[in-house]
Length: 291
Image (cartoon, rainbow, N blue to C red; front, top):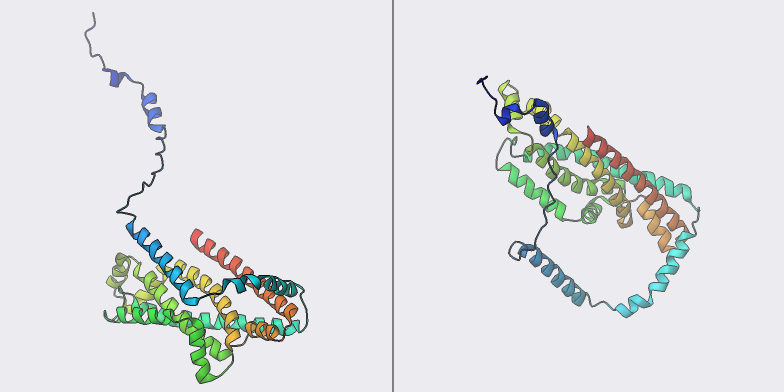
């Protein structure tokens, strides 16, 4: 009788069964269900209650006469119907002023991009040359962004008069503050190890920025720039109505002279171009995200 070594059950299991058991995908975990919790949800309740209170207070403060609003709704429909009857009267002027609007949006974007990148680098906590400079610049950015763009344009108009230059400068204030805040956040997200590695090689501040900070943030810079151009175009079209020129002034002049068909066609052109910009910026952001 052979009293040799007898393998145990685990050792006697064929190898392929063990490997096959490892290849079985784990069961998917069921999604977590968020259960209501009064203490955890209290900030949301407070926010909604405050919003409802402000809404009621606004309605009481404005003292809107809703019966007049309801009575004039048919008139609003008639205005829309007249605008749909497009008129090609002075359509060449509409296209020319649209070109002016795009030019204002583009120039304000370029100037604001350059200045915003410089100020954003100075405001980023990880690369600023002077630590107190970061909160100072961020406070300035917050103040400029808190003031609506038309207000900045009106301030510039008061000193420089009507024209494209006032629109570019007024819009440029807001764009610079926007890019300064965004770029400061992007630059601060660059890992410290990357900066230290470049600094250890003997690079100065400019070399660190162009060799480490900017390449690491390039995808975000491109995405935010594309988004801001879309916003600039919309704001530039509106600023024409306050004296900054462009297609907004053409629409305002047509409405004041009751040329509703001409105004409707100008609005349609603005919409079509805005849609094209949105599709283009969406394509750019998707490509940047994939890349």
